[in-house]
Length: 155
Image: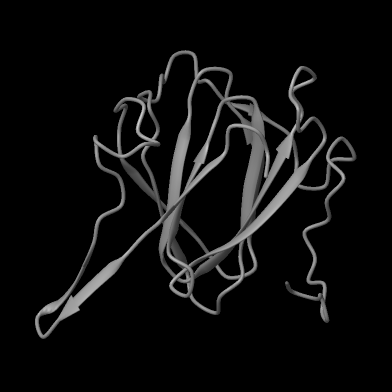
């Protein structure tokens, strides 16, 4: 896994009234500090990529639908420089991914329904000088293609 990326398995606790799922707690090992909480959605088949932050750590989970999250380490001083990580998260794999600053990341909605993603970054969004640095999904700088690869072996 890319150096600095952390994963937290999320547990759903159901009862006859519904369910509850804790996403991030201040006493979690991966918690740094609180910036804000926001929700974003992605329509089926849509790619939201690529971007990274120079300061901010993102903590993302998908609470409805499924997304394929891809991370790329472009930090020249990192032990995992030029490494790619791919995660399938959402209703069938409830995890929180903590993405440190300097890691390009993006996702694609791979479910037939709109995906709902929650992000809990450690810094609030700065509207005057956003900490966001973007590349298009089709960039040649990152060796990844946002296409379905049928028959991919697991394990």
